[in-house]
Length: 624
Image (tube, rainbow, N blue to C red; front, side, top):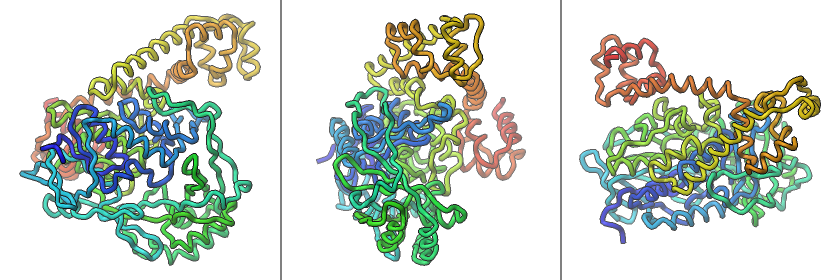
């Protein structure tokens, strides 16, 4: 039935679990993914979309390293948009509206193609642990499965409680049982700390009951792109529309009058809510001066009438949800297919983890996803990928794979979690990344694909495609740096763009560096058109070259700052370093350094309460 012993056992089939299982098995580890329901693998429990601000960058990074989230999203996209195009390229973020059923279907398809990966339906209720080392799992049906390592990706299922009005239901997702036993074992027997968090989802409604004429359509991009650098799905020839509508003062007054009926305010819900994705009740209370909030009306797939009401997460009863929705423009005759609900669940504060996402308390036990206090498919998938990589490397006695803050948003995410912890559901934003000009969505393959190749997740063919791309970028850069525009040719374009005329020949690079000139403005110039066609420079190549020319100063400055950070990253702190014996360290520094156990001076510097003088003391005591 099972192997005698697995290299890796992954508990949970959500976005963290499937990326973890995929990575470890793809790298060569015999892996078992065990989940309560095999039919809900990769399910989009909240809105049917992937990507968005900062999250789109994470999905491209996952793809660049050899993960599958981008490929699956591309295979199930029903609308694609590049967000923030009016801002600088560091802010551009891809987002895809997906077909919910297709998304799960393709994830299952890719998992089943891997011969080293077994799938099994059961519920893990406890871990087999000997001498503070994980040896396997025990299931609800009494099975004991041996494993050299375990990755917990339980999402919202640990002691999950669903709230709809005054009703409280034990469950990890609507109509799916909660998981008990794991929290109790880890906290009572091994001293793990845990907390409670709350998240929620919006109602699903019948699109046939909506009046879209009263809403503003939100179309996809005219030339839709994709997430994956390497996978080429069928071109998206048609796209489904999304729509935008708004709440209003009448609805807000109705919600205020019904606060007493919300479990958030009656004390039934104890978990901490996500600050950046609050329920409609919390929006109305917190932003009391706002007369309207945006509602995004999102189709759930190609061939379904089901629509997700994004922006209307709620824990009200079904009747109050219905009465509330009817007051939104276009929703006057709404029919609800599934009510929204709130869910609270156990999580384990992530400062209890190493940078590899392995527990500091139990060897070979890894945590990934919402169990670490994060929110969002993308954040979960990124952690799953990194846990899957590192669990394979650990059991095969290889060096860990840790991304730095200047290398990836994934590095920022994990570093934030393990050095700062989180007391509310953590969500990634571009503002969290101090090197966001380096961490653009367009260059994730250049940053990370060579690393993915070195650890065995990227194929030779994929590396070859990156090499070809980089060669063309260099060739295009050379062209722009060495060919000139003469005044007669370029001045009409400059005048049309309200840009200063030239009186002598200027390099293409010099003209393109002007903020008001876009690369598409100069492409029609005959000799340049000819060069582009001759060298087969794609839109992607032209865009890459344009970014490097226009933002050279910003990019160079961030690279210089990253070099300074690298010096601190390279100063490693021994794992058994005795902080308490250093008298000149502040009491707060001793306690926090001893608790967090940073692996480098740079990581120590990011722990709240650690001062520059504390770092100087550490340097001296480390012989620096």
